[in-house]
Length: 222
Image (tube, rainbow, N blue to C red; front, side, top):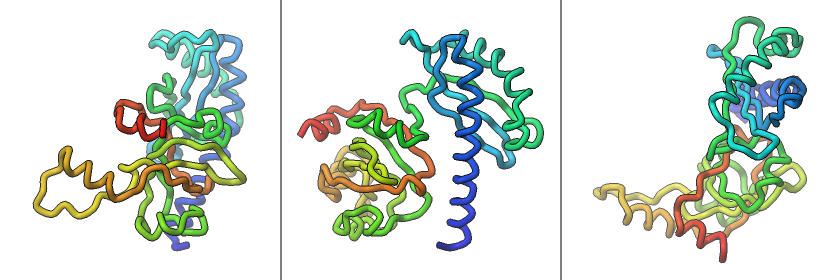
């Protein structure tokens, strides 16, 4: 692993540890108001930011008024929490919002909970055939870091993902403009339904992908 990958891995491990602590703090602050904390995202670089994604426990949608109420409730809780001072060491921005259609997937339990849903996963570096458990796929896509597919659960220390056709890198389309034919050519480069393992430790970002393409829905039903 080169220095850049090592730095990225260290930053990810720091963020995950911080998010676990702050998820606990924010959950305690919002539970009495009828909110579940879906995910917490920490950015502790130059732009210091704490993003808190919430759901209502009554099943209703999260509106602007909910985000305002949750923000006001969290301000004093976070100001008094030593975990926040340890993570940010100064001023930071607090953002409370609904998880939306592109719901973040931050914990192993999220990948289990949304099994069967379409998701996009970005990894810190290209994976090895041993890591994916699919040497044939990896041979065709040796530099891939962005995956799109249907979640198949979580096993051991890895996310299970059944890739869909537009998950792999597009083939060379020299002299052709992107369009329906280009997307079709890209789809033909990756056989549908191949299952991969993705080490959770290497997942930089992951979120649900809105299922707006009926062709992809058909792939899941096969």
